[in-house]
Amino acid sequence: MDIDELTVDNTYELGGSDDERERSQNAALIEQLERKKRLRKMAVPTDDKKVRERLRAYGEPITLFGEGPGDRRDRLKYVQEQIEEARGGDLGDLGSESESEEEEEEGEFYTEGSDALLEARRRLARYSLSRAKTRIARQRIEVNLPLGKIVNARKELFSELKTFSNLGSQFGDDRPLSTIRFSPNGKLILTTSWTGDAKLWDMPNLNAVRTLRGHTDRVGGAAWHPAATRGLGEGAANIATGGGEGDVKLWSLDGEKPLATLSGHSGRVGRVGFHPSGAFLGSAGFDGTWRLWDVATSKELLVQEGHSKEVYALTFQDDGALAASGWVDEVTRTEKWSDEISGFDAIGRVWDLRTGRTAMVLDGHVKEILAMDFAPNGYQVATGSGDDTVRIWDLRALKTQYIIPAHKSSVSDLKFFRSSGEMPHIPLDLSNGVAPNGSAHANGASASNGDVDMDSSEGTNPEPSSVNPEPTLPKSGLFLVTAGFDCNVRIWSADEWSLIRNLATDAGKVMSVDVSSDAKFIASASYSRSFHLFGGDHSL
Image (cartoon, rainbow, N blue to C red):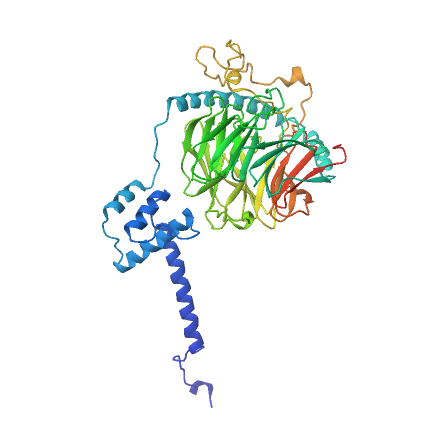
């Protein structure tokens, strides 16, 4: 038979019934993806109270056993989708529903603040402008340093960090530890746990000094006042903690009972942090807000909305102008905290404290944001996530600068190194040009109206030629430490973002990490209820 005589048949099918089954499976997958897209675009209230009201209007149970606010919103989306399909794509007009639709309209909204908040914003603006002026003047000097001097300074510091090892560990509490922080002078360690207690330990022996009892639920965050152990009186508010019951408490160093209780959050409190001036305190809450408090009066100044889910991470920029907050999906109250967080919505925000506006949206992580910290250079912020990565964001370019594959499991905490000698605490009013006695202070601020002269070279501009004839490279911001649920603490260079040293804890998931202000010690707190102290050859 000649090849030209062959019959061409294009009617056959490959696979037969198997091919039909694959096509139906593919169609199901495509339908599932389309459904997820529709659910993401569907507008539902972010307020849990309104979600419950909407479910009641549809005749659905307002809550199910073990259901949290995030799960409730997802169930409302599903119910609305079913109604839409039943009505041919039209949800119809419901009185309560149309009102909620108007309230949930996309876009910025503003809430009138108090006079106290207005005055605080003015003071923050003067403070941050003065600090930024000092920082920029210092950076102008640093950029002209010889390359050899920069390389030698980094090599000396990193060589010591490479010798870090486990110096010892201590049993912290009866339940998992949640936070660990060095005091500003490096002579004390603060730990918090799920028992609701906070404890102070001496350095480097790790002997218990004092136990602070006051919270009735797990403590999620703790912070030292910037001037604590460095000039601030022991009877003043040296420490702040946030508890699962929704309260933030202020503590002194000479007592075991709280000085003040700051109530306002309607859910669990995550991380807390003092503003660099020490005059204000920020707290992240699982009610979807973060709040700003006046430390002197213990009054709430600001309730910052903008996140649709629970807010866990919070940090302040060293200039005092910005704050960054990160949020997670609903966390159920089980004992396995490290396995509780689920979901793929993970967006952080950088806020301008002087105006209340969003300065940058940190959209890039595929899982929850658990840790945040501003770099001392003022224009970078690092975020640690449940997607096992650390992202470095550039506030100038408004985008991700670098992604570090930091750990094999969730990144629970991270900290840039800050030297207290290079970054001293400056009180709010002193930086604004008002000395403690009320007289004008020469720092570039006008005594008549408090405005900061950004062009003036008086006061805030450092004069290295008169103080230090040969300026050296500051150590602050040269390295970053991270903690992960893979039971490791890691040290990273802050220029190439390369790994300097891996420190294994052998004690379960690492919940928190911190570095002392002299760079001699690193401490980590673990889910296994113990904490570790790491140091180098010249630490002791």
